[in-house]
Length: 500
Image (cartoon, rainbow, N blue to C red; front, side):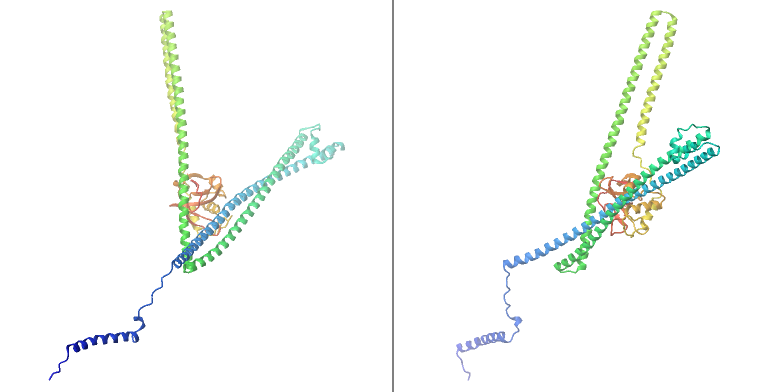
């Protein structure tokens, strides 16, 4: 017999099973599950002060990096300026030494001339002494010998004019002695002046050498100082940016390259502006010259027109006079004379016309001569390729101020020796090389031409050799080597190069 349970009892049993499972789950969660499945602790939220502090720290680090970058860039610029100054004073020394060498050569030549004059005077004095001996041996009195020897050759010459010269031989001997001593005195004076000039030039060369040595020492000190600053700065940058010193060095080299490109672009812009200004100046000069020639042509035309008008009036006057004479005489003879006069007038008119043609031809010839003598550019020397090849062979040699090879160079020493290899002798100094070459616009440069740098064309401090495509070979500065560079590598590029 089946037992019947109450309905409420069945419902209670079904309900208790889920509740039991839930309780068991809660127990398991409490004691048996891993901690990772537990509810995480709440994340702390930074305060506004903490956020501001973090931003300030980042900003301070960035500001320090920027400041260090600026300091390193300024150090590089100051070093370049110091090295450029070495080039400036080195060129001044080169010029002073060149002048001293020339003065020394002049002094030596003057001294040689004075020495020859001394020999001539000695020969003349010997001839005079021999003549005096001959006079004595001929029976002349001692009083006459005193005229020759009483005070030596000098006083003898002074008193020679007072002698009663007897015979052509005596006159010749005395005159030669006088001329020899007069020439000696002049040449001695010239030699003394030349020696003083040489001494002054040598002193100036020594002074400029001291300046160059001082500038070189300053550049060397600056180089060491900058190197130390760079190492310290690189270490600080590596710490601030959490990188390595090697990486920061690469970064600084990249920044330096960017700065160099900016400087070259600025130098190019300034050079192009200067070239445009110079071209405009030359165009204005050409315009003024054209206007002057046109005014002269018009003036000549007016003068010729006035001359022709005067000739026409003269012919008319002569014709009127002829007619008046013919009317007054009424004879056939007058008519013949009139015809002759007319023929003469015709000849005069022909002469006038011929003169007009000649004047026109002369004016045209003048204009043609002016045009042909203007801006014709002489062809470059055939030795340009040899000069460029010589310069290329020196690539990598160190810059040394006042050096002219064979293994070290300064700027003008390199260009001088390069063209000497091509058989052309250039002056030693950059300024003198500019003055000795034919000037051509930068836009018209050819390989082998020289490019110059200076605040003006009379204050040049650097020179390089153009090799094409806007590039040159040059010896830049202390601490550098002979190398290729853009012609805009340095500031103050002059608008004209020099063609040898």
